[in-house]
Length: 125
Image 1 (cartoon, rainbow, N blue to C red):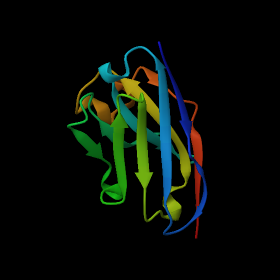
Image 2 (image 1 turned 120 degrees about the horizontal axis):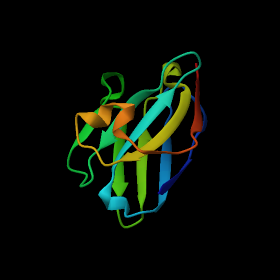
Image 3 (image 1 turned 135 degrees about the vertical axis):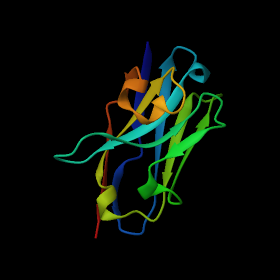
Image 4 (image 1 turned 45 degrees about the vertical axis):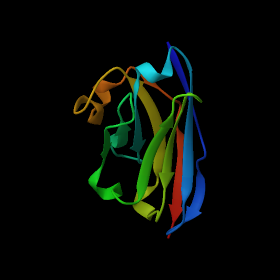
């Protein structure tokens, strides 16, 4: 079992930045690939970014490329999502997830076994 807790969400103006963190506990963090998903009201949950167990391989949704950066610190059992140049359309609940998969399965929800509770990100125009 892996327990995930997100933090760092909030309200920010368009063009601003936010950093999300996801702390993991339980099984060995470095054994899991990590992903960040988001879900806006009335929309399906979608992958935003994903990172392999080693951190070597990453994936970004096209609309966030160049603005968002996923990173992980295996010594701290934490994955991060730095979000810059935020837009109103980035408004959503953001979830981190952990799973044993590799790309390309990491771009799909079924590639993950464990999910955090989510943190709200609101970008005002």
